[in-house]
Length: 258
Image (cartoon, rainbow, N blue to C red):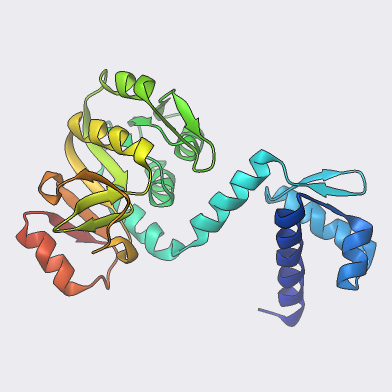
């Protein structure tokens, strides 16, 4: 990376920090604080708007609710993204054209959604707003977004309406992103409101596929979802701790390393 590119990235990261803290910025303020021209700051703000970080207004920029949650998602999406992409690719290899799939929310399932766009005639039911938007861009896929209460920060729907809708469908796979999996505590999540959705997806699918990078292995989340014996497959990254992988396989789970 060139020195100039590093300067640009550093400056734009600083703008995002100020915007997150104050909710708005002015071109004149940023120009003075960063010791650069107003033309440069305007260019930075325009680029950040195109990337979804902010909304331009006269004389500066503001952080709307949509921008804020998009910013949080972009940050989480970057976290261990290469491992998540490899896991997503391994999931896609399992899927056959014409399959019906249930998908919950999470950055790993978001990357899975991107990979699934390579397939044709899939029927996909999801409570993830980001996955639904991504998958909906492929006209050969039938995508159903479950309607219910919204967790806007993490972009998913939940509640009784979601559970009632799920009862209408039967699927080949439930593909679930989770926050922890270990032999003793089972599969767990930090989202209490999504745990029931995860269980219903498992109930309505022939196979449950857990997608989790190595940081989730051997960890315990806030809310119990199921025992490991209820999981058909675990797809994780190569380089995951061998002892843990052996434990999962001994428990009867097929482990696939992406």
